[in-house]
Image (cartoon, rainbow, N blue to C red):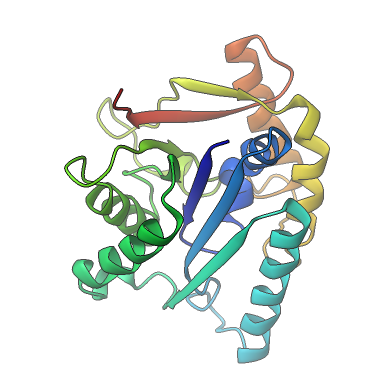
Length: 222
């Protein structure tokens, strides 16, 4: 059995990025934990009410139960403002969960995502998982409406080198995303049911699978 930790910036990122992979891990008997770093939605214009934030957190808890996370940790950092927080503060929060969970595998955001909170997530994970302290497999995932919207060059583009077959879990991933009532959008927005399926089909075409999630292996020590 592996212990797996998902480090996501906002509620819904965990489903968009690796929802199918998580369901597969759990189906194979692994324990999966999740960190949600920031509140989500508060930076949007017009500003959403406090009740909307509470509803989003409730949706996130429903998703966690539906997917089967062993435990979810909410840090409550302000949405799209994590660059204002001392990085050491964020790292220590991540370290506290790593010390408690002792994961074998960590999944987090791509280091060059458009969203600043996603980039801080990556920085905090790669710092907290220093190899002198632990030997954890680290993967990054892509997040629709962020990863693909970054300006692209050969350095910062997301390039998957690991593909996870989620064909048996695709329907449940979509069901999980539907539980995020405020986050799901209408096509052609990428954060839509159609957009999620198209990306999974694209990664499947790249790997000879019906549906797949693409990840990038950052580091594995054996």
